[in-house]
Length: 228
Length: 244
Image (cartoon, rainbow over the protein chains, first blue to last red):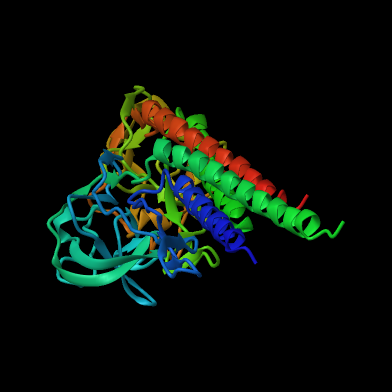
């Protein structure tokens, strides 16, 4: 069959994944410490075409595309003041560490609270790691010294959901913790809206290619093949 | 792919929860001792998108919002000159008993003398332990010391219990300016450093300018997630349009 059909179909599938990712970005425009995610599209690989008679090279043919990666943009975003003593933002690079049932995870969302023992936790109840890796305790007035919170340098950062990231801690981060502040979401809403529209038009173009190839095949079967 | 629809819908829902919490704050902008709500946003589960994506790609399922307690920042003090108005000038709570007999905590110090002669909050919760004002004592002449001691002249009548919990964010708000103790909040204990000021009330700590800014942010987020739903619907229509 015509490989063009499959190439165009792979393009449509890739655009549909992109749409899903853009929806997720737009859903998180107000999630503190959210890191924006790209969507890198890659070709499947290429075939070298040869003239079957002379053997001369004609050129290459791509076999379609897919969304290959979802890279994170870890650039620190601006902090905004909330006045709430248990809101924390990191000015500069680094992550907060939290102790979850699955092991240590990292986050830039510092909307913290505490448990009945007076230990600082995230909104899901996971203990926040202190500068030395131990728990962070609230002072008598219910606040926490910002410098008690650990800031970790993390490499190989990957999304784990629920505001959390996995990765390998590599020493203390450069960033400074500020109490009463939250980091804004890294999603650039205007850019996402534009991407959503352009991706939609690409999807339509892919659909048109599929329809055109379909019509061509119809012609081939109906007209060229007819005996009369 | 239908996932993109639910992802965008989750975003709308999260923004809606935010708007609900903000509306509640706005409604309580002049409620004595009210504390604004803290709304926490979080991203949801991440997984591989399936067809159309390589092994390195992931996509999230949108966002969710939840109330993670209250912002216990001190509200501003309003001078009323009324002898039975007290405001806490420090963290902590006044301990009261609800009509149902449960222990509750409040920061609303707009006290009244009930028909039985006991000091009550404006909502009718009696102080715990009770403070009895004997008949014939002039309410205007009552004095309330910073530590909560209620006296008429040199005669001590009782004590307003000032208490605290380890984690105020864990308290359960009961919607009438009072909170109920919970396991997550920790045990209720005497607050040694807490101070009252007679003749004043603590205003709501809702800052209208901040709330309005947050409201417009949430509204924009809601609209964008709504736009995403429309687009995802069109995407599905294009896919369906392949077969004519």
